[in-house]
Image (cartoon, rainbow, N blue to C red):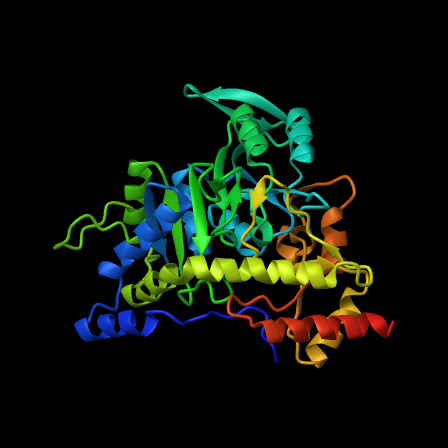
Amino acid sequence: MIPLSVPFLNGNEWKYVKDCLDTGWISSAGSYVNQFEQQVAAYAGAKYGIACMNGTVGLHIAQMLSGVSTGDYVIAPNITFIATLNAIKYTGASPILIDLNPKTWQMDLNLLESYLKENTIEKEVEGIFYSFHKLTNKRIKAIMPVHVLGNIGDMHHLQEIATTFHLDIIEDSTEALGSLFKGKHAGSFGKFGVFSFNGNKIISTGGGGVIVTNDEELAKKAKHLTTQAKVSAMEYIHDEIGYNYRLVNVLAAIGVAQMEEFPVLLENKKRMDQFYRSELSGIGDIEFQLVSPDVEANCWLFTFKTQHMRELLSYLNDNGVQSRPFWVPMNQLEMFKEDIYVSMDDHSNQVYQTSISIPSSAGITLAEMETVVKTIKSFYSAL
């Protein structure tokens, strides 16, 4: 079976993990944690990085530090991995779900802007202006763009919307390490960016994440909250409710080694994307995700649309090519059916019903890609 997306471990991972084991620094303290934080922050063009257990908890902490609280709204796309919305619910807030652009599969910003103009009112609270939903009178505190599949929407337009409607930008960049919009790295456009290093990402720590920000005080607060809010190196004194969210040193050691290899793996992904687009262009009814000329995508997980998605999905998996459908739209999941969904034509459902992801590992070989393409072509030739 050619796997969908698995880690590529070919650098100093064993060496650095052995160093942790030899020295006994395997838990939440150790030099590799600091190195990994600095590497990711520097790569993303941010001043500070805070390592954490995974991207989900990173999104949770970023919202808390943006003042998101019970009863608030946070704007998010309707097509995303569920972690985005779970993190919103952890704060006691509720999502306002926005349909996607049917070409780029990113949040439809024109739809969002129209909705906010028609459905919000500006109010001043203790000298600070916020947008409130007219119908529910709840504050809309933040917007969480998700760079779906490593692609990026128009971040300048999103920044304009955020400024107009007093929204904090928390970038769910969990799929977008290495992606750029007009030369600026994903995760660097708002108050916070959050990256994930799950096993299926371009580089992995097994499970892990990094929050990035340019605000020193917020960075210190994030580190404080993710380490149980402990204020003394000696005494067990804690000054608020904290969280056991820190990344352990042995996993950070893997991350350091992976970051050393990241430029090579990123190029591998881009070559993979070019190969698939070239070889599958004009095959059947295949339609690719549109990437704007302003975007340099990291090509994380190759996904395309076809009206034969379900049949192709079964065919590929039956023939040794691991493939998966796209995420179920959030508004279709039981937990979020009562939340606001802003849509004109429900493009989310159409993309979900027709999209399939194919093998995209950073270490995928040419022979494996040729097998994937050959199998796809054989499916369409038999139609």
